[in-house]
Amino acid sequence: MKNDYLDYGKHSRRRSAGKKTAIAAVIVMLIAAAAGLTVFFVSSYYYEIIDEQDQSVNAAPVPVSVAETMDNPGAMEQTGVYGLWYNSQSAEADDSEASIYHPEEHLWMGDFKDERERVTAKGIYISSSYMTAKFDKALELVESTELNTMVIDVKTEDGYITFNMDGCETAKEIGALTKSIPDIEKTIKKLKEKGIYVVARIVSMMDPKLSKYHPELAVTKKDGTLFKDNAGKTWLNPFKEGVWDYLLDLSRECVKVGFDEINFDYIRFSTGKGMNDVDFSADAGERTRIDAITDGLKRICEEIKPMGAFVSCDVYGAIVTSTVDAKIVGQSFFRMSQYVDYICPMVYPSHYADGYYNLDHPDMHPYELVHHALLDANKVLYMIDPDGNKADVRPWLQDFTASWVRYHLDYGAKEVRDQINAVYDTGYSSWLLWNAGIEYTRGALLDP
Image 1 (cartoon, rainbow, N blue to C red):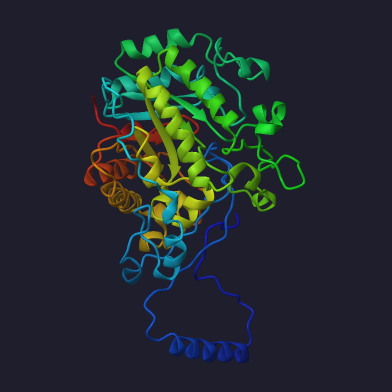
Image 2: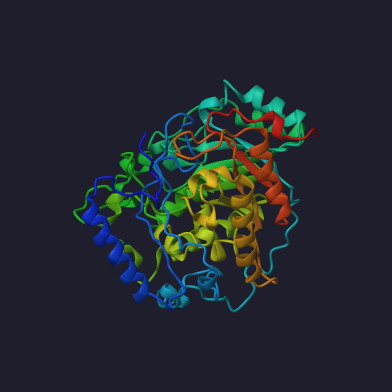
């Protein structure tokens, strides 16, 4: 199939000898004119990730949005406002964003007495569609290995809720409640009796269900019609307080039934092509996309943490090092980490373009890619005031073969374990494995 990733070595094969000579001459002139410059960078176009964490194990997802500068020693001399390394040619643009972060005059939640018991999580994800068919198999894997955590779907990419929530009137009103998990209290009790840490995954802004019944909460185009991403799905508008009210209602219900942690996925703005026709100015005012996402997460943390549950969020791996991507999707690794308990970058090697971190084909270098990405995460967190909240980094790792990528490896025990070792070698201890088909590599996991 067509290679969707950047191919820096791609050239036309139909060139006459004369054209080749002319092009060579132009290249020589350009090189001479560029003498003395030390920084070169490449920015790619943006695409929507249809399935943020490779929802289909067989179909290829549209490539992750990539807007990176090539790894170049001359370009890594300063840090931007997020603690991110940026290219000197874009320094002016980065500095213009310095006002988006306003340190608080007092310690945030300074009166909160944290009595929650933290867990070094080593876990797997299980989707709502496999809760019946593969739950016992997943549970057996957790019990027989070093794993101790299960991330379970609560709100899906289609906006449905996987169990009955008596206290969420909006979910009832729009018909979002299902019985994918017939008895959630019984399920959670069973897991906890086995010493398993239980995480509720909430797909946040992608929500065709709520958007349909409450279009006033959805992202709309300039002509007033609903925005739809490349997969035809509608999204919620993070600038709307009602969106965060809904997510808070869902979070409260998850805590009530016993979840240890609330994990927010798709906690971002869409990067679909149609976003060019969206105007947020009426709702945003002077706030940026990063403000909208960060302020909403802060509000959730202020209510959910005192209830005894932890709060985490999933972010693109690229936003750790790319200020461009951070601004577009509204995810600032630096700012989000000052509120949530755990921040979970999706550092799947298959989702990085060729050349990232000077790796020819990142999917073929699982250890190196994860190691580089988490070292950058270290740099960002180092800049956060140690007296305030600082999230623990808990990355999502790739336990699937990205056959749609032109240059890829068949991911087995070695490739998965290499990523886990990279986590440990960068000073972190928690990690999560992703496989949309819930087929995890037993050979990559140690015994209990």
